[in-house]
Length: 159
Image (cartoon, rainbow, N blue to C red):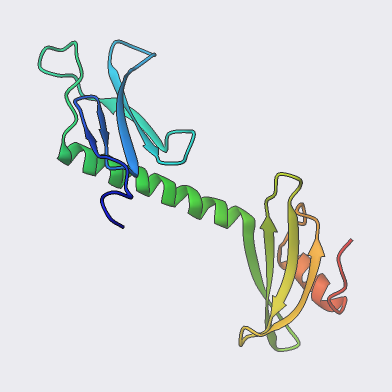
């Protein structure tokens, strides 16, 4: 990507941007201090809002600089990564059961959608080969008992 394609970098005392991330020092509404908000381009809400250091005059905020901005980017990126991992864990569950000497992994995958989430239940053998897949309610509770019952039913769609 050439420089012409990327947004212009901003390096001001209270506003710093590399075109992807923007750090904005703001007045902390809860007290007399300052806060910094980290916004990822294309997002409406900040990925991170945290306290910001006072300057030497104890009234105004410390100006942003390269080192502070890089630390803020790293921290905000980590917050987003953890959020994505947590969401993935909430939407994708699995349990393994052994039935008649065969180890079967049962997976529940929920796909969020503005018009209503959908979900599927699938089973894999010990080699990762899919044995069955059926649609289920996103409210389906996957645990060892429900997985075993589904397998024993011949993989019929749970009610």
